[in-house]
Image 1 (cartoon, rainbow, N blue to C red):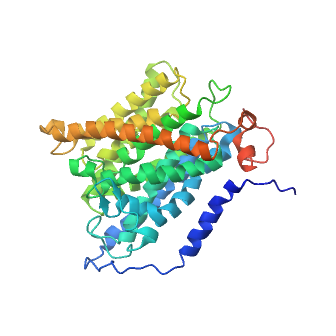
Image 2 (cartoon, rainbow, N blue to C red):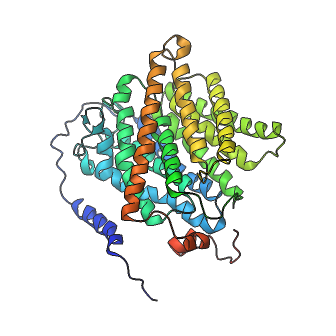
Image 3 (tube, rainbow, N blue to C red):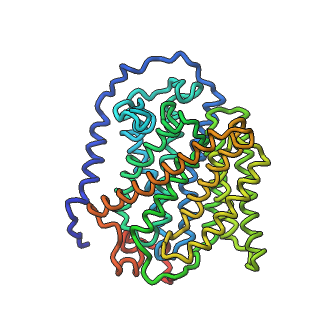
Length: 442
């Protein structure tokens, strides 16, 4: 078999990984790891272990959800674009990502990269600054799952035209320079958004708004797909399977964010389910009221929008309010998807209308309904800080991601050639097809 000549720049990632593997054998200095004296709660630990596994399952679920929506010739590529985040972000998180997000705060902006570098000082002792009843390493692993799915969500906006090697580089840059700072601002005790009182129970801002704006930025940067006006999903059963896995995993996403097996986790669990159910029905009934057939794809998209919207508020609102969250978010996203189709922006799988706007609706409604501090309780401070945070996060994630796309493109061209795009990314990027059946659908 003839071997193609490979440019030196494609060898650098392997060399970097080899260096990390060698350095990982060096002894880690734990001299600053002082026993906390806190007792591990076994019920909380068992629940967080399960919740972490549930959130991990969401990324394969997302892969099926996205994969079923693209054309057959890009099915494998789209699946792998989500799957690869499991590998890239997991290693990056251990090396420096967790430290940037949750290390000693530098001005409330970013964590000290040396605090937990190579998981130094991350052990089985609880850390009461983050979670006082579970091992600190478990907290770190739970947070890792959020760091994995966020860049995976972005790939839906770039699908069917992005070069795989360039995407891998972008995922690294996004995790370091966008996700980690956002997580620090919002969830670290010294993060400036958290100190303002901005509420994000499980990632509406950190995960969904950031991914939505990054996907929108990427869609604008890459431009439209060649010769594509409207496409039909390749595999609707994949979409429903992915939705089911996402819905199932989301219980870990939201209820796990209580960081304990307690009443707060139950509240988040119940709210998560009812918001998603309401949003799914809303989407179907809007279709029906518009004279359209009730589609399986619409039901799936609606359910995911509801999950997105309740995420920032899952532990702060009532069941009834969760129904309202699902209804409003589904209505807003439904209209946005229709309006987007009239623009020149090719956000392939509607990441911004669904995840971006779903997260925005959830964030704003959290400021309205959050127990004791929302507008309906007479408080204005939280809502106004949510508005300010929305402006800051939107500008940071959209503008920052655009700069990272340009930087990535300078090092590795981000868009495949017209010939590769026409042939499909499965063959041109991976040398594989979804099956050995030679009939492919365009």
